[in-house]
Each structure stands twice: as C-alpha cells, then as structure tokens.
Length: 96
Image (cartoon, rainbow, N blue to C red; front, side, top):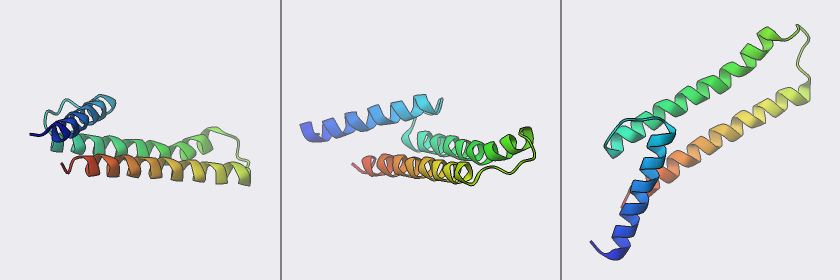
C-alpha cells in the first residue's frame, strides 16, 4: 500500500471510530458501524419530529406564532440536511 493509500485508510478508520463513538456503537466492521449510525440518525430524526408534538401538548392551547413554527421547520430541515451530508461524506470516504 502506498503512503497516500495508507493516509486514506487511516483517515477512514479515524472517521469510522468517531462515528462509532458518537453513535455508541459496539460494531467492529465498517458496514455494521454504518448500519448503527443509520439507526442512530433515524432515532434523532424521530426525536426532532416528536418535539413539536410534545411542546404542543405541554404549552397552552394558543396557536404557535407563525415565525416560531417557520423557525422550527427550518431547524428540522437543517438537521436533516446535515445528517444527509454526514452520511454522504462517510460513504464517499469509504470508497478507497
């Protein structure tokens, strides 16, 4: 393996280890780490989508101001976009 390939492999291993630690995965191989990360991301997305429902049930019966609702929608879109970008980067980096 050339020096350049070794650097790529090392960088990928570091990224996978970081992903593994963030998702609290105990998986040992690349595919399992990505599967665990995918499950973790789905859980986060579910939490994000449930948050407005939980807030609505605990707050008064008054409707949410339009700007706050729009802000939440933008925040959710930003989270989804960031998650998709992270997955794409991880997948692109794994094709050594």
